[in-house]
Image (cartoon, rainbow, N blue to C red; front, top):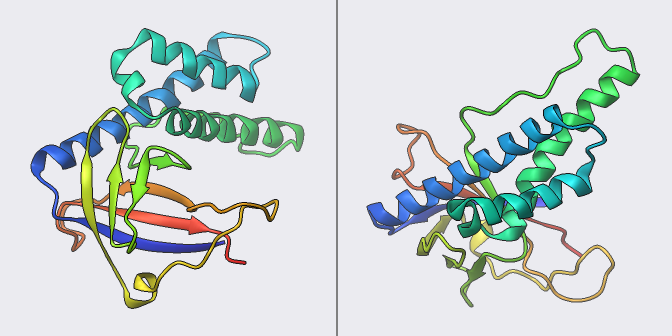
Length: 186
């Protein structure tokens, strides 16, 4: 898997606020999934996915987040739970009990919730937060046109996966965020 990183540019304060709300919502979904696992027995990944659907019905701000991004947050919760179970099985000294995230800095948009421009130099977020379009600033290698990508089965075209990460102030970015493009090159 190859990861390409770009910075989001030319956004307004409202657009960046919308992205921050999306990141906080992803954190909320992850923490609610961990809490659901703590409170209930026989919880697995499929049950957490169903719980995400229930959260979207219960909370309006969760409904704004793209369903694939909600499920990616549940996957992150399940990864911590699964790691805990594995450590218990292996009798590790440190079990790594799943904790609530206080400072989540990313939301993951997989195949929907975003649209890449034809030239690959701007991205539009299309979920309920209405963040809108941003220019992408990246190095020369990332600016080259993207080749046709194939999914893991080898059939069909896909655009890869975008992971939106916030950037801490003073890191050299223009208060935007970094965005990572992860894809399999064939």
